[in-house]
Length: 104
Figure 1 (tube, rainbow, N blue to C red):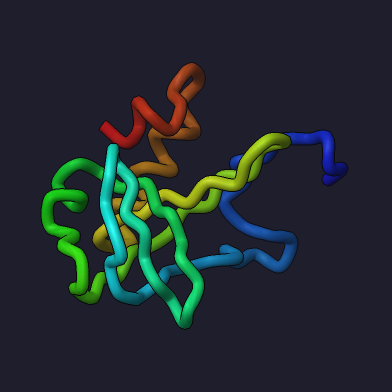
Figure 2: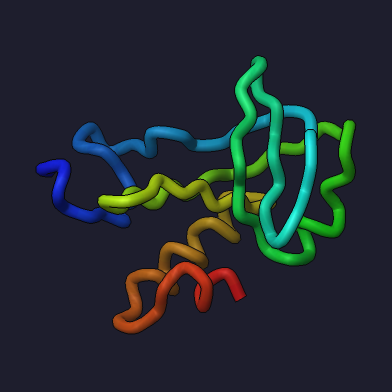
C-alpha cells in the first residue's frame, strides 16, 4: 500500500492485527476518547459511550483495538471484547457506514 492510500483493512499482510488489544492505566477521558498509559506511552482510544463512562482515571482497562489508517490519521477504536470489535468491523464493511455510525 502506498502512503497516499487509505485503509480500514482489518489485518496486515500476515493475517493479524497490528494492535490486537491494549491494557493499561486510564490517564484521562474526554469527548469519547480515553487516554491509556501503556508502558509509558499514552494511547488515545475512541470508545463507545458506555465504556467511556466506566473508564475512570487511575483504573486499569483493557480494550480490544481496531486500527483505522488513513492518509491524514491513524485512529484507535477500543472495545470491551472481541465480539464487540467484530460487530464494529462488520458494520464498517457495509457501504456508507463509517466509524462514527458503526460506533453507535
